Image (cartoon, rainbow, N blue to C red; front, top):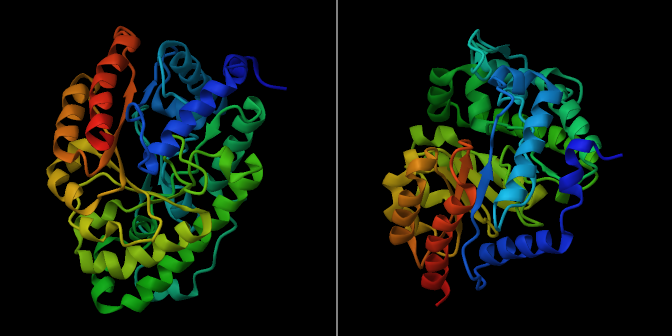
Length: 374
């Protein structure tokens, strides 16, 4: 039985939601659309929940996510598809390998990793794949995913666990200094470690897919919590690549990420930015769809995005909604017609008129589509 909090979402016009999904599919495939889709959601918090409330209480996170879905469907004129970020932090994979998690005293703090697990890369050669279904925060995520799925009856697309990316997990396990030295002096050992981490990520992802019945009931296989088209659900994170060369990205990130794309479909890769390895991003897979980036840290790379991403999708996360409309126009001016950028904005101020805000973005996205498709 669908939870009362999800009833409005479950009863929403199915044909309209399919029309919205088709708009996203077409944009990803560079087929003509009337406007570039707008990934805007209304993430209000009238309950006053803290980050700790949201992270460590199934029911509070569920209540907040369903409220966001309902308000977004009611108040946004178009584009919105009900999705939920099933969030337990980005520590699940590292924690499964033995990393200690600290939650912090600040109620707005997200969990982090304390210390490292191994003193040297050599110690990881005997590393075994942990039981991702029954270990720490990974188990906690799967329990929350099941809780969400049972209460929504599948009417909301649910995110994967924030896997943090294989390279970042490796850094959690052996420390940044040991990792960077090993990338130069013991690359085979690093590749071996990444392979073990990737196997753990895929075990956890397979368990998540079992819970929701089909990968197409998920937004993506990672934290990316906007709907991704069928066959392109595979998602990776590569925040650590801000600290090394394109050659290193080619040697370590691409083989690791390609395994995820081969298994789940070549979707998106996340990096907040900046992007010194950007020339290599699209070489990860023949069907690679694009990236999701933080505008705050990646706007310096607009010229290179236009150069290296023709025919690809870029989701730009605009962290400051009051600046996002102007920044989205700047993005269009820099990237059209070669690259399609989709604005990703979470509006949390209920005093802002959501419909009017959407319509301001729509003016730009309509012009954007005209520049791309004529």
